[in-house]
Length: 158
Image (cartoon, rainbow, N blue to C red; front, side):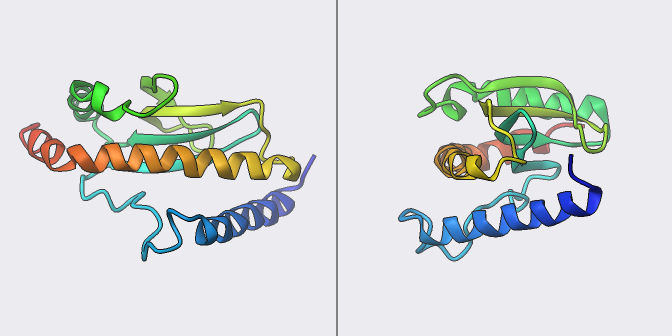
């Protein structure tokens, strides 16, 4: 078991290596900004990576504090489910109530996951990195195709 400080060091190493992996990936090395992540330009809607002890995830997360608004945004995204899932081998997982392990915060998540990997096992990092890159490229592309329509639909939520 790792201490809190060792986890912090391991996490920093993981994300630094992932960044270096992205710099050499053929589809990413020419991009000035590798990922849009928190820069979606839609309030409380982010694209994220997550690596844990049991799986790795690539996701859209809706984190609005107001539960009603959060669920309304989730429903707007659900209208475009077929477009968001285009290109994925399996359907995305749509959870309108997901409790984040790190904070206990309730969010909505739309994600794909790689099961059976453990962030603590450095020998599995290449598999996690490949999963992250492959799936975020698809999710980001699909999201960007509908972003302007989403912004317009979400703008009308009261």
